[in-house]
Amino acid sequence: MTETLNNAIDYMEDIMFKNWPSGSKQYKSEGRNYQQEWKAKMAAMTDGPVAEAEMFPAEHQSGLSFPMPLTEKYRPQSVDGFIGISDAKKVFAALLKAPRPCALLLTGAPGVGKTTLAMAFAKELHAGLIHHASAKITVEAIGETRDRLNYQPKEGGWWVVLCDEADRMHPQAQAALLSALDSANTLRLKFGGGFEQGAPLKVIWIFTCNGTGEQQTNPPANLEPRFLSRCLKVKFPPVNGEMPAYLQGIWQRETNGQGLDFAQVAHDANGSVRDALQTLELSILTA
Image (cartoon, rainbow, N blue to C red; front, side):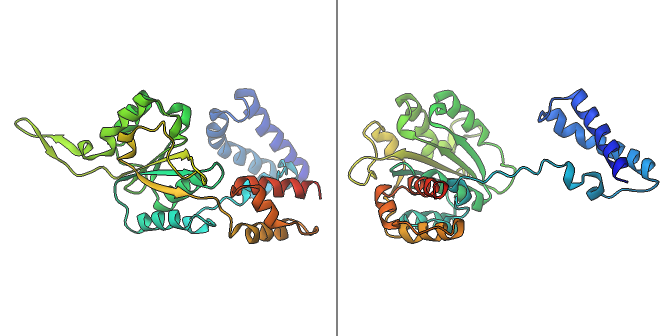
């Protein structure tokens, strides 16, 4: 039986690698079409149907397992799963209960969870997510996004547009956003001429930026006042009070080694959960 399975697996691999590079779209999609052919061949070789588990025995699977970085492994998947940032959590929890069109500007130091919270919120809202990295927030990208927002997302009734590091946006890009963020976006052509107020699009715009000031929660000076006036400012202060206990819990789950000075790790991270987890991971690797 084992020899039969080996022959069938070799046959499958010959077909796949002969026609398409491993990992390509064709490799993934066309493989499904060949699945029935493989089953038929194996059934002929074994005088009967073969179960999926027999088609792909464990010894022929890669078996490779790579541990995830702690920053990924412990990335919160829900708004309630974040530590600290209590005010920000209240804002997003309220929008989950009663979503409404708005624009939010999340300000805080790097690593405090601005982007992660926005993505967790979009997931919980079952919204369509459009994510722009800082270098791609251009006038052209904004125009394409606004066109896309006129269509219904694949699931749910809402869109979330997440623009990272908005403090790096060019002033022209900020100007292009103005009408999208205020009531002018709801104007519709009126039959017979003119315009009328239409229903607002179900869109929540979220902008993240590295803030200024002692706690890095103030908007940076390069953001246009007209842009800022259209956003609700949500501050992400450094995560301090809950950090030591949070780190201790992760350490206990990940290792049996001696405990660290978790308060000192949190202090050295300046309230950045990401920096604290990276320090923790380095300590685990060198324990």
